[in-house]
Length: 444
Ligand SMILES: Cc1ncc(COP(=O)(O)O)c(C=O)c1O
Image (cartoon, rainbow, N blue to C red; front, side, top):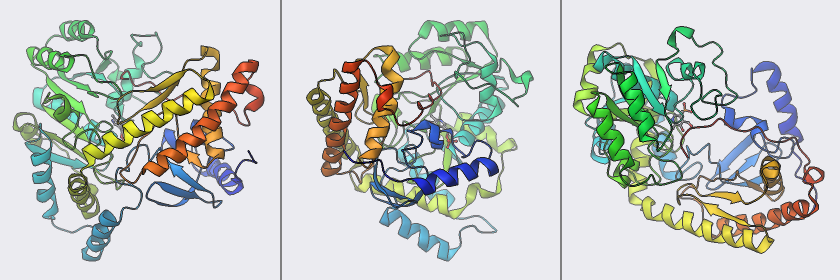
């Protein structure tokens, strides 16, 4: 295989960005260190469908898709046309837009837990809004949580506590610098699947828990009855159950994991995907939990901008029209079969695991090689024009041909890894530093 793609423009812009922007980027997942730093593309110039072009002119097949925010495909013609037409009519008005009510109706007809709706511009912000409402509605301060819920103080304060699993911070490597210490103990993590732990926490904080907030599922279907039991326990302690469906929503079912698994929470947080990438988030829930928000100070200028509202209405309707649920099943299962063939053909052992909405490669290799093999995989895939991690987020724009192209590149990349492993040395094959590990989410 020939040389790595030239990414000199990306590299020098990233260096310059480091002088102007603390941390280089706005999202941890967009830092160069999250990929094969020095080989993977860092800045994009344009994107369409399942592909993007970087500022050096290289074309990549994209399996990251704006950390899953893009669901129909980049620059979708239908959504973008609706947005452009809306821009011509005004992107934000002085008074209210009827689109707010239209979208509320669409969400109420789509998400099982939705009877009332509020909007935001992002997922973490929507989680913070949910936290405010459940605390305001119950008059209680503690939130028990399981999953990733953004960057805001209410949640990051949990990093002052001891991780139940490892004794480290709940999010290994992330210290709550800048988060008020007085919030310590107001957001408490529990482990997914551990009902005893949840029950103990509810008992320990009797009368103080406003809500249990959790990602209901990521890549594995929970054991039978788990979410039902979480709901029962939560309600026994007069707390609200909140599902954070920012990541799980839309691909598995348009009504979310709650529709797929048949467990309806009191409140749901939505964001990514609902607009095919335009900034938008929402908190929806029962009248009982949501209505008191009318008496709380929850107010922001841009929450009613017409772009997000139009993009959300169009994206949700397009998902329904394009039979997205079946299509994501086909794409995910097609990818899994082809990826398993690629692993087998390389002589490595392992498989493509997890639910079809977020299948991930898991190689059976010694622990000491895992991060190296992960980085090497990303490096070798970048070299072959595929921007990916071990787990993928497909869009409706991904075709069978895209899957074949990806798995052909993966077979070659696995062969490189296999050769290195056979020699007991992956270092000589790595042209980059090891990628950074991402934060842990408590939910698999
Ligand atoms: C489950 C979940 N909640 C909240 C967030 C935060 O969303 P945002 O990055 O839009 O603030 C994310 C982002 O990855 C998420 O996956």
